Amino acid sequence: MYQDNVVLCGANSYEEKYYFNEDFAALPDAIKKELRIMCVLFVSEVGGILLLEFEEDGTLIFQVSSRDDDFFFDEIGSGLKIRELQKEKEELLKSLELFYKVFFLNEEIEHA
Image 1 (spheres, one colour):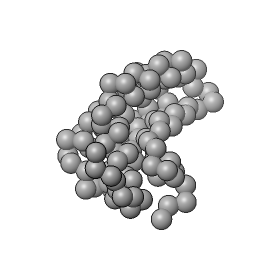
Image 2 (cartoon, rainbow, N blue to C red):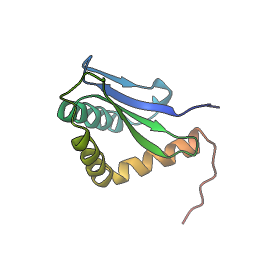
Image 3 (cartoon, rainbow, N blue to C red):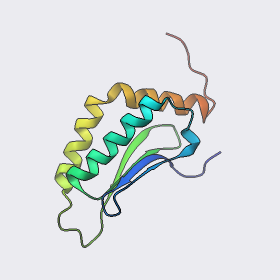
Image 4 (spheres, rainbow, N blue to C red):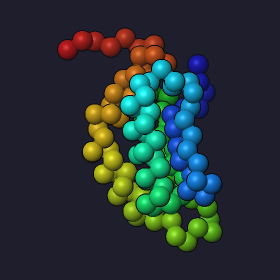
């Protein structure tokens, strides 16, 4: 279906914009709102560009980049913030991975 990583959403501190992939329009509005807040707060704190992407196996990753001439980008803070979000939002992130695996990769999920 997809060749590369699939972007779920992202925020750009340079253009002050938020992006949401409409392929995921079926997600509940509360989740879309939480993703927007999470991404926008991230780039407002550390700068740069944040993308939440699904890898081929359905793993959700944080992809962060910055301009070469952005001396205000906080690379260390970026790594710390990602780990903080992965811990605080673990349930949300795991649910998004499950959603992607079921509805996009058509994986069968075993009930526990």
